[in-house]
Amino acid sequence: MTAPTDSALLLAGGRGTRMQRPDPGAPLDAEQERLAALGVKSMVPDARGRPLLDHILTSLADAGIRRVGIVVPPGRDAIASHLSRRPPRRVAITTILQQEPTGTAHAVLTAIEWAGNGPFLVLNADNLYDITLLAELARVEGPACAAFDADVLVERSNFPADRVRAFARLVTDSSGLLLDVVEKPTDAMLAVLPSGAPVSMNLWRFDSRIFPACRDVGISERGEHELPGAVSLAVTRGMPCHLVRTATGVLDLSARGDIAAVAMQLAQMRVDP
Image 1 (cartoon, rainbow, N blue to C red):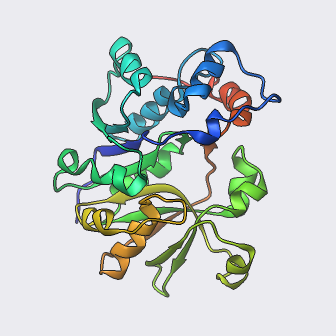
Image 2 (image 1 turned 120 degrees about the vertical axis):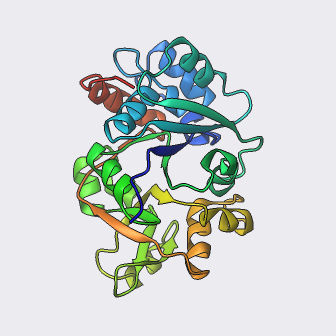
């Protein structure tokens, strides 16, 4: 049986274009406005001034993670500066440079030397996931994907139903193994998917079997080498991927309209990365 992993890869290399878009209806303080304009979602502060990054690292440490790689693009100085000023005490950080933000599959591929041959979690830097879910993924055997219930996400997260409707869906075989990841499903696609097809929030457990697919995956309709496509490719090549089903929500910082509500919720949480 595979031992639990103590490693996690945090994807913070995206452009943050949705966060950069002006939103006159979003009440932001000066620092939140500055970081939103830069698209540095993981560094947007809560109501106490602690960035989302510190909350993510706290959750990972609580889940037993001790080694964290953070994929960043050139010029993402806010992250490095913060980690230098307030280094975490419970997790060891390695920053991994992604020269061009060409997609999440490429971001994972840039971490190939950091990962070595051992298993590791992969998660977004603009989402805060449940600690028990992180710990369960760290313990499972082999590659796995967190599988969220769409209705529960609407109920327990901070995004509306129409946003959840656009999230990737997971298709499984009769034994529960992943067959495909359907990105940005249309209404027509949703109509033919199995009832209750779970949602992917880009939370995974991988090992070295994912890297060839990250290298070989084609460019998506959005012009990027995306991780869901790489996972689908790896599955077709024989990589088994289990689903870890969860009835938890996710805090999401995708756009400026998310900041005020998420910042207030984060301010009530313990921070000890």
